[in-house]
Every structure is written in structure tokens, then in C-alpha cells.
Length: 79
Image (cartoon, rainbow, N blue to C red; front, top):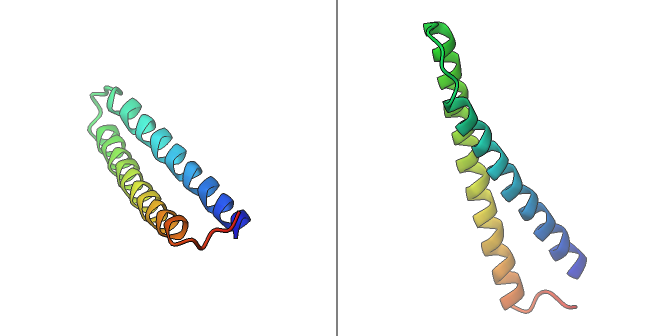
């Protein structure tokens, strides 16, 4: 069980890293300036998609955190 918990904690850390990196990419795109309306639309659509992914990975991480906390508190994890 310890190995499973360790693997889940690693996955959770990767989700957090992915969320942070994705948020940084979205913020970087917000700095892009263009006069072309079509390009503005594409950039805005990508920003929205990136922030949606940030929200999803953050939610997944929080759910995994909750499961891990219950598992550790419940005594299911034997070291």
C-alpha cells in the first residue's frame, strides 16, 4: 500500500506542476499583441482552453489530495 500511496503522491505532484506550467503559458499568451483580428481570436481561444485545463488539473489534484488524506488518516497506508 505504501508504494501505491507514493505513486499517487507523485502523480499529484505532476498534476500540480502541469497546472502551474499551463497557467504560465496562458499568461505568456496574454502578453502577445496583434492587430490581426483572426489571430486575436485564435490566441484568445487558446488562452481560454489553457485556463480550462488549469482548472481541471487543479480540481483533479485537490480530489487526489482528499483521497490521499483520507487514506493516510484512515490507516490504510502501512509503512
